[in-house]
Length: 479
Image 1 (cartoon, one colour):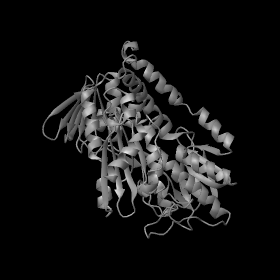
Image 2 (cartoon, rainbow, N blue to C red; image 1 turned 30 degrees about the vertical axis):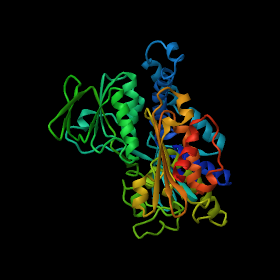
Image 3 (cartoon, rainbow, N blue to C red; image 1 turned 180 degrees about the vertical axis):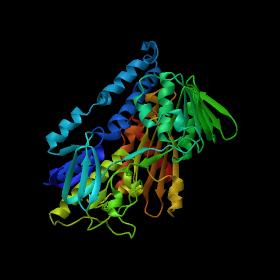
Image 4 (cartoon, one colour; image 1 turned 60 degrees about the horizontal axis):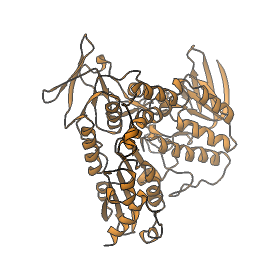
């Protein structure tokens, strides 16, 4: 057994862990990352990048077919093999050479293997060959191990070898029939992708489609999925699963119905990757989510930072927001606050301070890459009301904006802003419609900046763009 000493040790080399280590090194500290799989993590190989590659070609084809002149130039159908090939390239063919090279260029050490906390500021790494290396941190250990797919305890499910988000993102062939258990983001995006690629898709959406979004958005996505040929069964709950000797999967629902498919994708939630990282050594429960303070230090059962505050958690494992971009945002705060504390500098931990992740509270942006896209930031109308905010909800038909009619014939969409009537600022914004993802950041800036509505009147949208919806919403609010 050999040993190494670094200022910061990070468990997990996904985007969150990479950003923590990078910020630490940029701040003048030394850093090491421990990774048991591929450097780059879930987002690079089984989530953000490959799944959006699966969706993009169909979206481009749809856009072309909505425009006279362009639709006449389109011949044939979507080439599934070409789409899968492009997906492979975005997943770097599941090789992490490029990401490893980046770590080296950034001055970040890499230790491959399973990392476990064995004592204060001490991590033991067991490599695939069984060789163990002990790493010691001068200042901090950061848990950034992410999450895995949650498999519910359904009779026969595990024996049926179901797909999770990983198998859906990395599939080498398109199944003729795909059943999806779930109605959230992964379920909706993969239903969109595989229906376009040629699968006959059935969704068992017990809690509805995108139930955390504004209701009108979930309803529009549900309608569009059905228009694309997806059988969306709202309220349907899987009771048992069985794969027979022919490979056919049979799902029995709670009401006695049955769905047959060639593959079944389970997309009902996530579970933290904290089972085997040594949490017991510091008095924490293995397999549990990690609770953190405002500067993302891990808290013990008594609500105080573990040890002298040397243990941090960033990204999915702290259960604040399970989104890559929000995890990277946390990572920047964590890296910077570790540097500040190591150098004895002041910690900026007030609301919207540099060393906290305030946006996690009420300013989280998210895009669901269905067709149509759903883009949102901040609170829904229901969430704002539940938070005790006196609100006014303003809606507008996105298809009535001049830029939308130019963007696509028959453009259908909807926009909503939720206004805090006491402060006259926007606390929530939702768009649903084709190609709305790139419109979201303006809303994010308005929410994070708490820009007063009377100042937004002076943010003049270019004409004719879909962004003119901002003017229409403000006009509607002023009536």
